[in-house]
Length: 157
Image (cartoon, rainbow, N blue to C red; front, side, top):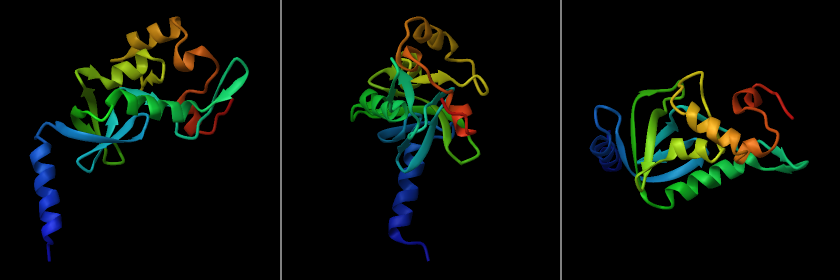
């Protein structure tokens, strides 16, 4: 038997998710490159941030770059509604989308600030932003780090 709570949740999901995968609502930040809007997990398109428990090195000091990426995503959203535009899903069922808060492209800004890398395996959309961050030695580029995809495979500093 389908419960009323389930029907309401399904109705809300349909209302806030168009056929193109567009989602609007308040976000809960899961980690630097994953948010949840209207109970739908969204993977930020074209970028990869350090994993939650990942650390990096700056001036020979270890810093929690993964935690900082999550904090930066939270600050960019700042409690405002987000609009996410996407159309495909990853192998975990997350919507892959470009997300905006207060008119700012969150994906792009994370890369510009050096808190995310352009995820070239899937997209070259944010390569120019990464080059700027690298040249200006922002975020990850201010020290030593392991690319998140390599860190997930076991590589460490």
